[in-house]
Structure formats: structure tokens, C-alpha cells
Length: 195
Length: 195
Image (tube, rainbow over all chains, first blue to last red; front, side, top):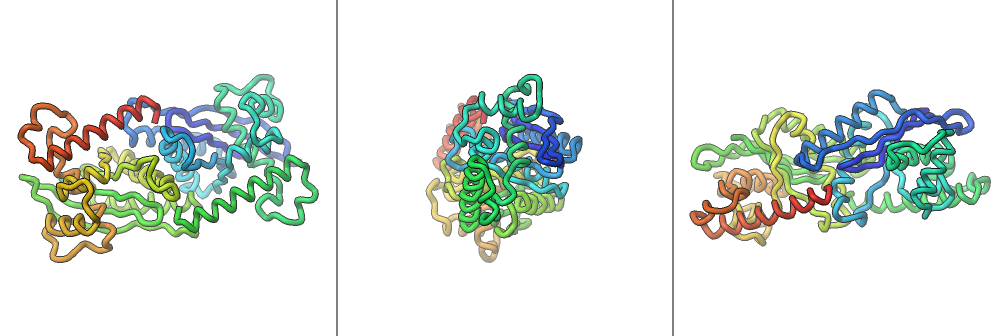
């Protein structure tokens, strides 16, 4: 299963591609950043991000696109551009019939380090180790996109179904499942509000 | 000159099309709402909005797409979906080389009623009168999309250039120009911040 992770941004949009094999064996495929120049108008910036993401999706033909969920209370100066970049990734996937998964930064941190408040450097180290890389992926900030792909690959089977499977989970997996459930709950509330 | 106005939204996205002729003579062409079901996942909702907007843009071949500018401090429950819907309109226009103009609700209200704080019903009445319609456009909430198109058609020639032309403007036009300049200033600040 090929998973393409997207760390959305208007100036820098991280893309990380991995393969998740049997027994959740992970392999690194690709990491890059799609950029748009702040000198362009907003519509041309979105077009640049969209075109860059389409190129990656068509090249790696992922089974799932895993995108960081954006929240309205995120950094006010950039949140709308970030949400719109995430929208470009969602559209590019939906147009090709590829399922989209949204994961929160907390879910990604928990899945990778077992700690929902892990520091950036811990994430980068764990991503490097989990993908058997000899050095940190570059550009460094694209590690977040790989983390989102890994997060989706490692999601507990019972994460969104809840219930009986959870007794077999490790502490980290259980925390992850709880975070995913809280997020799903929030998602339902948002959907009810017409978001 | 054909102008297609977009009042962005994820559940209801208003579309209004007008023609602005010589002496700023305005004619009504089309008004409608593009919808997406709240039962769909976010990616499929964005795809529905995008496809609906593409259909309108290809059908009416506008010279400009005029979209309501979204602000991060807008309604927190819907602002991200609204920004993403606006992003779909920007992308659909940019892919076809059609210029995009962003106008704030205050600019639209000022352009149409001379009052930046005008009520919804005043906007609807003025839109009806300016387009020589015999009754209010339906669906009623699509009047905002027509207002955005009219706002772009009536923008003062010196609005964004500022300076010497403004002495010839009416009070309403001067207020509009000032609002546009404040918005352009905010836009430059946002661009500097990498939005």
C-alpha cells in the first residue's frame, strides 16, 4: 500500500511517500516540498501548489493521501492559506478517486513517538529510524509529510471503530486511538455545523 | 465584460454572472447556488463545489472572477470550509487564465449601497434595481454573488492606484476606494507574512 502524506502550506507544502507492506513494514519512497512564490497572487499560488501535488500523485499513484487536519484556531496569519493548500491536496486526490485521510498533528506525533507532544527533532529521528534511512530526510521540514504517511500506515485497526480491539493495543496505540476518536467526534460536530 | 461573482461556501456557494457594458451599464445574466452535501467527506464536498464552479465558468466564460475575500477572524465553525471553497473558485479561474479579483463584504456593500454596513435586504433591493430585474433574484442568498460581480464592475478606476483620481469620486466611491486601499495594504502585509 502506497501512502502519500501532505503537510499543507501555501509557501511550502511537504510531500512524503512511503510503502506500507505486510506486518506494517515501512519503506521510504520519496520526500519533497512543493512551493509557491509569495510574489504571485493567491490564485496563481494555489494553482502552483495544485499542479505540484497532481504531479506527485500521478507519479506515485498512492492508495491513500494522508493530509494534516487544519484547525481554525491555528496560526491566524497563515491558517487560510494552509487550509486552501490542504483543499488543493483533497481535490487532487478526489478527482482521481483516491481516498483521503485527515490526521491531526497530535495523532501523527503519537503514532510515531508515543508522545502527542513530541518535539520536531524527535519526530525527525523516529521517521529516519522507522524508514531505515541512513540520514534525516531532506528538506528537514518535509519529515512532517512522511510522519503523516507513517501515521496513517500505523493507525490501530480499531482506531475509529472503538471497542473490543483496544484491549490488545500498546499504551501508545491506545492513546493514539483515543486521540483519533476525539478527532472523529470533533469532525462529526463540525459536519453537523455544516463545515 | 462578463464578470462572474462567487460568494464562497462549502454547503452553498453563490454564483452570479453579469455583463458590464459601456458607461458601466449592467445586465443580469445568471444566478445560482452550487451545493455540496454535508453527508459527504470534505474531499468529495470540495470536488462537488469545484466541478459546479468549473461548469459555470466554462458556460459563461467570464473575463474576471470576483470572489469574496475570506478573513481568518470570520465565523470559526465555517471559515476553513469557506476559505477552501474560495480556493476552488480561484483554482478553477487560474487554470483557465481568467483573472481573479478578491473583494471584501464591506467593499461590495459600499459599491452597491454607498454604506459599508448595509443590511442584507438593502443589498438585495439595490442588486434588483441595478440589474433592472422585475423581482429579487432567487435563491435570495445568491444576491451576494451578484453583489460581488457588481462591486467589481463599479470599482473606481483609481481604487488601487490611489492618488489624484480620487478628487473626482463621489463620497461613496471615495469610501470604497479607501476600503480597497486598506484591504490592499492588509494584503501586502499578509503576503509579507507568507500567506
